Image (cartoon, rainbow, N blue to C red; front, side):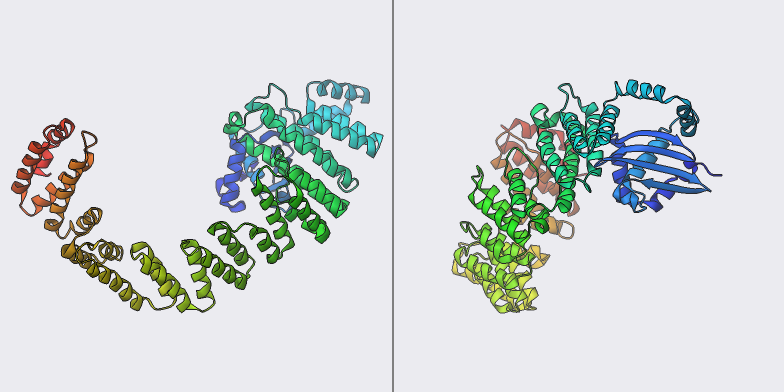
Length: 558
């Protein structure tokens, strides 16, 4: 009979869980989320802190691995991240076997008198706040639903109140106590959903006050900020589940949610209009919109964010446009409208707003691109190319050349437009009567990997220094005699620019030139040039020191 340890092999785990699930389980283990592991017949039982406290059981029965977790994925039969974390914990630090077997412990407790058991439980609870809370909850439930709700509320708020001496290594216990206090409240959702909503609405601000006492930076090493967010997510999820059963008045619900979302000190219920849209309905969403319109916000963009959320909740692109069109003072505002239209698959709206935006901001590359794209999608390829060509003609060069190429390819018309684009640059160069070099042509040809034509253009009328360097780098392997003089000239330019500072770049260029000149047997020429540099820059001590340091390499070029 195989043991549990023998069944929990790496290959078995990989067959049960995806790589992502395994990674998340490893992260849970590393963050000490596995709270306890104990033995039980044929296996182990563990508690683990996720969005709530979950129970994981792993068993070995008839040479087969059994697994169960109380989380939603585990309930579906998946080997979830919690199972992975417990597996790692078990393999790295297995619980003592046969010290306190659960069945033996059960028999011992059953032998005790009820009075003795009560005495033991109360004694243990004195040092165990979680157990103490459970006893209070048990007592409250026996007293009736109203008393239970009141007691559970007090228990939760007490758990939410952090100790002034809370340290990072005890934060997990603090969060676990809150999850434990939430467990019985969650069970009351079917019978008292409205009351559970109220409890959650009281608990969320209490949790937010955590940062009034503690600096998150102090806790970040343990990823505690994320742990607290998981707890808030659980509170919000419980509130939503309860609301679905309580079916509160839509207008009252809108007021309650908006109070939270608009409060700058409580980061909760963000985009609530979308989350609760089915419960709010048209009436509640209209009330939510009215609240946002009339409220005072210290940051106007918060009003816009909420109104956009309401518009998304209605599902009407006209509502979203109405919100975004309140401010058309920048090209980006038009871009946001176009993006919203595209997400809603409202292409005609997108085209209309792209045309309107480009008319107002013709220098915006984003709006130009958006409008050209919409023209293509509408089958208006020539309109798109005319638009892009107009921009290119105003500033011909590599960036807009590449934009033109992309759009011309969409229209299956690139060869003609390439000739036209290069021809425009040549005509501009000719019209300058020698005042303009061939940099624009050289840059484009190099980008197309047309090195020979780029070299001819540079030789014909010159180009920018950085382009000469690119040409040298492209030609040094097959044409060292072309590249070496360029490296030498660039080194001279760098030396003329630098004033007793960092000479690494000119030294590297000299070494590169020396290596190429050796290939073509022209080292004597290089040595003469080097001697001239020593004389010309003899006052630059740092440069001379570097020349001396690299003298052997420079003279032999090895």
